[in-house]
Amino acid sequence: MTREVYSHEVISFGFWAGSEQVREPAFYSYTAPEREGLRDEPLTPDAAHWVDTGNGSLALLRYDDLRTTADPRGALLGFFESACGAGVRTSDWPGDELTAARERPGTHGNRR
Image (cartoon, rainbow, N blue to C red; front, side, top):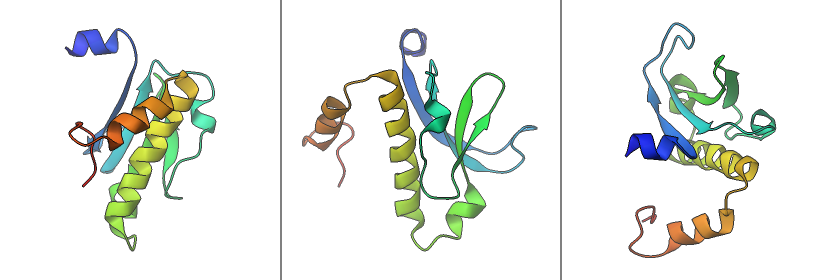
């Protein structure tokens, strides 16, 4: 399945314990293939930022920045939604259709 997904387009999210390039735990997101203008898209909360990995752009929100916010859950959701929105807008995906699917009862992305 991963091969098939990555053969087209994907927006990925997760938690990263760190590496030589990013030396601390952080939440991340990337869009593949990366389209022009992705790094110009805004991210929330203010502590989130884009990083050039050499292979593309990575949206990062440091764990320490997240845990010190008044609403960590809301800030993390805002980060993921802003990074996803950036990928959707720059990739010409049908954003309205994706939002509608997420809000339909019984769909995988349904919020509770």
